[in-house]
Every structure is written in C-alpha cells, then in structure tokens.
Length: 442
Image 1 (cartoon, rainbow, N blue to C red):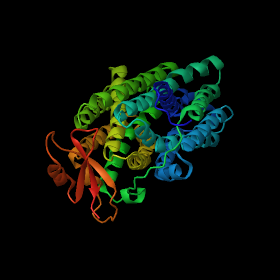
Image 2: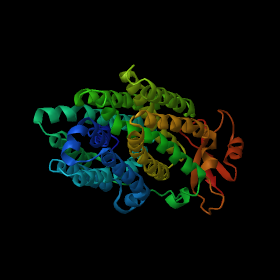
Image 3: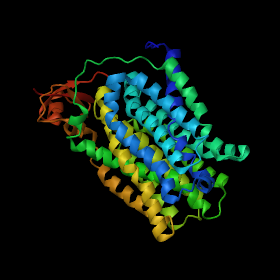
C-alpha cells in the first residue's frame, strides 16, 4: 500500500500497529497458567520451563542487533510481514508439540518472529508518526502488554473448555493470522532515507547505548520473571490455574494501561526521568510485597508491578527515540537497546528457578529484582535530555550527519545551543520550539 496521509488510511495504519503489537506477548504469558499440565506431559522441570521464556528473550536480543541490517536488506514492511508469518506458524505448531524439546523449539520459532518485529517496528512508527511518537509508542506498548493479559486470561479458559493445553496455546495463531493480513494490506512501503548517520557498529562505541541496554534489560528481566513465575508461585500456594492466570492478567492489564497513558502524560515535558522514577518506585513496592507478604494483597502487588513495568517499558522506548531526530537512526538505537536489554532480560527467569530450587521459595527471586530496580533508579539519573546530543556524538567519527536533538530554554539562541552540542553545530528543529539538531563537524 502506498503511503497515504488521508485520515481513514491513518486510522487503518494505527489499527495495524495495535494488532501487530497485540501478538508480541501472549505466547509467553499463556505458559505460566498452564505450567502444571505442561510439566506433567512434557516432563520439563522448573529450569526447563524457564527455557520457554529464556530462549525467546535471547533471540529477541540477538536478532535486534541485526534488525537494522534486515530492514536495509528486505525493508521494514517485508520484514514485519515475514516475522508475523513465522509467529503464526510457530503458534499453530504448539497444537502438536508434546515433548519438552518441541515446546522449546516452538518458543524459539515464535521468539524469532517477535524479535524481528520489535527490532524494526519502533523506527517505522517514528517515520509514520513523527509528531505523535509518544502517543503511538504508548499505544504500541499498551497493546503489547494487553496481548500479555489476553494470553494469561484466555488461554487457560480455552484449555479448560477444550480439555487440552495444546489448544490453549495454539489458538494464538488466529490473532497472528489477522495481523499478517492487516500488515499486508495497510503497512506502507519503505521509503529510502537520504539522511546518513552512524552505523549500528558506531553506536556500540558510545557509553549511552550501553547504559540504555543495561536499564532496559534489568527492568525487562522483572517482566520475564513475572510472566514465567507469578502464576506458578501462587499455584504453589494453592491457587488454581484459572485464578493464577487471572492474577497474571491483572498485572498485564495494568501494564497496558500504564503503557498507554504515561507516555502521553510525559510528552508534556522533555525530561522523562520523573516519570521513569515513579514507575521504578511502583515496581519496587510490588516486588517487595511479593517477597515479604505475598498473601497480604496479591492483586495489589501484581497491579503495582504491572503499572511499573508497563510504564517503564513504554517510556524507555520513547527515551531511546528521543535521542536522535531521524527515524532510521533512532530506530537503530532502539533496536540496539532492545537487543542488549533482552539478552540481559533472558537470564532472570532461569535465575529465579535456581534460587527457588536452592531456597524453596520465590522470595529470593523477587528480592533480586528489587535490587535490579535500585540499580536502574541510579542509571536513570544520567538520562537528562540536554545531554542527548553530546551522548550520541562521536569525536572520532568523520561523519557530518545529524547526530542528536538537545533541549535549550525557550527564547535562547543557537549560540546557547552550540554550547550544548559541544563540537557540533546546531540547527533549529521547526516543530520543536525548544529543541535543535546537532550536526557533527567535519
């Protein structure tokens, strides 16, 4: 479909964004509520079950590093359509997967498809909605989290009605098929950008890229552990699969609500840090509750963790995109942040399983995540928007491309801006009254 700015065409594109995002998490969140039945048939232990989360997360990390290359070779549109097709087929194959290795193989297949979408989609959103990045990334993140709630709530119901956990997992091929059809019909064709910029390899020489990776990874490690072990932890306390799945659905629904609303609220200012800190505080409260008093208010703990994780995920994507003005460059930085981040996030579910085997309790794992939140609170202090341009500049590079966007007080001139850019020159961004672009000096 050719790019079309007509309102109806934009609505259809927004619907496509929402539907694609809806399919990126149910395959993970649907596993926890069905864990007991799956373990009984497949013979997987706790650490084996952890692989159903760990393997996709590792793939999300590794594939994100080649996301920019995939986009350059095949284009974002074809990459997304192909990835959604892989996701659809992988979900369908779970209807026949009875051995542990087969379940892990389908998890890898689906995770590969999800990884490609996550690597290229944020850049597409920034390209198509340059003035509504926060709102659209909020919608994308909210639907992603809402898909997690859908998997957690609906899969155990379908499994109970059908009498098969296989059906409870494989039905997710249906919404994936809908996403494939919508992507074919409404995703716009790729547009070749004339803007040069740092390559993914050059981004990896910048400390800011690694800081973003670490923060994203430590936070999303909490998500991967929650979706893997929240339901089993309460099943071990006597909850049914449906009830524990409902608790996970509450967490995911709160994620979706926070992901939808917080980026829009945070868009009123350039500095996202106060909002990030508030989401981290909620995560800390939720993990502390799960560790020290799980039976006191389980729904409240799940809701707090959900709001904290969902808001932080969405805001982290926005912050990465904020660093650079051009969609391709910003998308590359976002892909790298997710790449390193998901590699980090792949480890905690396995670590929580090990800690459970050693201590006999999930509390040690929740305390691990409480410590991770404390680390990210400190790292977030570095994300001041007036340092974006300097953080992304590279004095050793000979490129003269646009390298970042920085903020200056309204009414100040480009002389003030140049001081922030350091060894770069500044150009006013027309659509932002308090922002300018830094160009690297040759």
